[in-house]
Length: 293
Image (cartoon, rainbow, N blue to C red):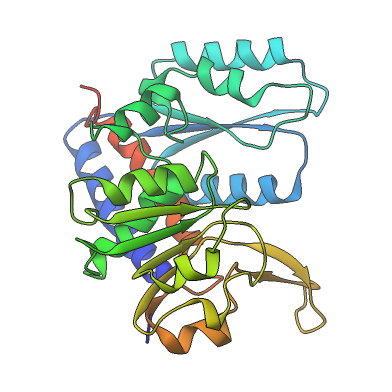
C-alpha cells in the first residue's frame, strides 16, 4: 500500500508555478491576479479563502478579497460579478460557495465570464470539458487527475467507480475518467444515494473515488485487493484528542480499507491540498491565455 501524498505534490506544483511567474514578470509580463468574493462568515469558507489568499502570496500572484455580509442582495452580488468581469487586471475570480439561501448560486455562476471562471463551474466550461475541449476544470477533479498523473497510476481500461454525483466533484470526475486520455480511458460507474447493489459495484472497481460527504462510508468489505482509493470527504467530527476539538474525517474507513489498497489518499493531506493548487493553476492558465487565447 502506498499513500498518495497530496501535500508533497501540491508543494511541487507550487514551486513550478512560482518559477513560471518569476519568468513571466522578468520578461515584462503581467502578474497573475485572482479575486475572491466571500459572503458572510461561514467558518469553512473563511478558512478556504484565507488559504487561497495565502497561496497567492507564496506563488507571486496578486490577490483581492471582496467581502459582503449575509444580507447582501442578489442584485448587489451580480453587480460585483459584472465589475470583476470587466476589470482587465483580474485574470480569474471565484465566488465562494455556499451562498445564503436568498441568492441563487446558479444565477451567480452563470453571470461569471467563462474566460475568468477559474472554479470551472460555468456551463460553458462544464460543456467543453464533457466533450474534451480545452477549458477550466473544477479544481478538485483536476487535482485528482494530477495525482494519478504524477504517481503514474494506470487508468486505461480500468473500472472506475465514482461515489457521488455532485456538480462540483462527482459528475466532472466521471467525465474526466472516461475521456480518451491518460489519466482516463476508464469504464466509469457513477453511484449515489439511490444506487442498488452498491457494495457489489465497489467490489468490482479497480479505482474508487469517494465524494459523498458521509464519514467512513467506504468499508473494508466493499473493496477488493489492489484497489486505488481516492477519498474526497472532509467532515469535521468532534474529537477529544485534538486541540481544536474536532478531527477531519474522510468518506473512507481508512484502517479497514488501506491494507487492501495499492494506492490511497489520506485525510487530511491527500486531495485537500490539490484543490487549492489546482485553482491557482487555473488562474495561471487564465493569466497566460493558455485556455482561451
